[in-house]
Length: 119
Image 1 (spheres, rainbow, N blue to C red):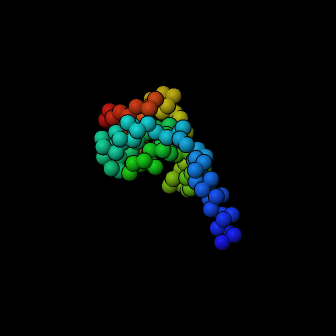
Image 2 (image 1 turned 45 degrees about the horizontal axis):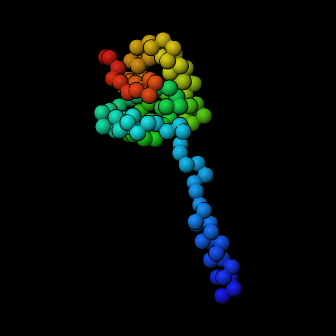
Image 3 (image 1 turned 90 degrees about the vertical axis):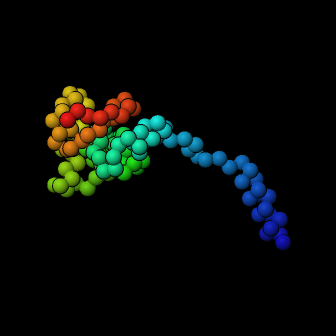
């Protein structure tokens, strides 16, 4: 009985004053972009986007991306994380269509907007 008298007020206070430590994810993709990725882009399509955005894309939709942050990819010859990251950075600077063609990307995300890449 003594333990209940001690524990119940503490539990009630904790439940009453509880709040999430991180209430929102500031790096999350906008809901409209997530919806577009899930409805407009065919499953398994390849998306070309900045590395940080690509990391969120694969978390939100069943898609492939050209590159991911190198610390999140196995450093194998087949994966080539550094080469892919370099290719994405090159594409961001130049919009070189050869990057998309090399990796089979048919969609891109820039400045939070999704668009189809020309073939």
